[in-house]
Image 1 (spheres, rainbow, N blue to C red):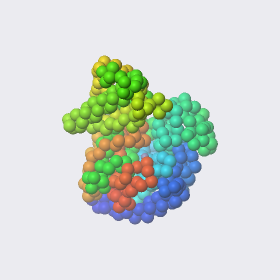
Image 2: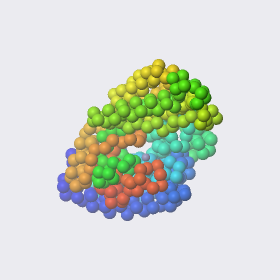
Image 3: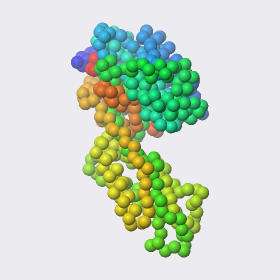
Length: 435
Ligand SMILES: [Zn+2]
C-alpha cells in the first residue's frame, strides 16, 4: 500500500531535513579516508573499517539497533510493529577501489540511514523492521586476486561464499589470504563457514539499493534518478590468443603470412559489427577488448606478428544475446583460422547470468517517482552490485541510480546532493510503506 499524498509530502520534507546528517557523513568519510585526491577504503582493510565505525556511530546516535554478522557486515535496524515478520532491507558497500570516489557504495548506506532518520522524525511506524546493511568487500576484485566469486561481504552473509575462497583470494596489498585478512580484522572466518547463513530469503521480504550511476546516461538524459531494470550479465574470455607465425615482414609475400594481429583485428571487427546488429534490433549490449597486445620480447617493426593476446568482455541484460555473441566469436574464429592459417584460442569463456530486477519493485519505483514529482527513466546497470546476490537467493530486489558525472571508481565522480536527496526521497517512500 502506497502512502497518501500528505504522508508522501511529510516524509519527503523529513528526508530533506536529514540531508544535513548525510552531508556531514560524506564530508567526514572523504576527509578521513582521503588518498591523493580520491578516497581509499580497502576491502577488509583500514579505510573500510574506519567507515564502518563512523557510520555505525551515526546509526547509534539515531537510536537504531546496530548489529554485525560473522563476515563483518553491519545492520542498522529501525524496529517495525511485527518484529518477527521478514524485514525490508536497503544498503550498499562502504569499501572503495584504490583512490576511488567518495560516493560509490557509501551513498547507498548513507541514503538508507537518512531514510530511517526521516521515518523516525516524521513519526512513521513501519509494519516490519526496516534494516540498512553496510556491506563489506563489494570492491574485492580491486583488492583480491585469485579465484573468488566477488561481492564477498554480501555473499558471505547470504551463504553463497565457498570455503575455498578463503584460501584462493589473495589480498593485493598485504599478500594475505582472504581468511587471514578477515582474521586480521578481528573476524573468525572458520566460524563463519561452519555457521548457517546470517540471512536467508525467509528473513528478507525485499532488498533495494541506492547507488550512483557509473555511466553517463542520467547526465545525458538530464534526469536525476534512474529506475534500474536489470544488471547486465557477462561472458568473458580472459586468456584469448591468436597464434600465427613470426616471419620477415619484407621478404615473405602476403599470401604466405599467418599474421596474428590482422587475424585478431578481423575477429574484433566482426564482433563490433555483431554488437551494432544487436543494438539496431533494440537489444542491450556493450562490448570491449580491454587488452590486446603482442609480446614485447618477440615483436618488432620488421616482423610479421606471430602471436597476439586479448581479452573479451561482452555484457548484456539478455542471456540469449550473450550466447549469440559467443557463437559469433566461435564461428568467425573458425572462418579466420581456415583462411589465414592461424589458430584462435579463447581460453574458455566465463559466464555470469544477467539479473532482472523485481517487476513489482520497478512498477512501485515508477509510481513513487510520479507521487514525488521526480523525473526518472528506466536504466540498465553495467556494473555488478550486491543487489544481484540478494536476487540470486530469491529475495525480490531492485536498485535506484542517482545521477553522477565523470563515472565512478575515480576521484572525479560528482553527485549533487540535490539529486541524492531526490533518490533518498524515493528510497524512503519505498521503505516506509510501498514494499
Ligand atoms: Zn559500488
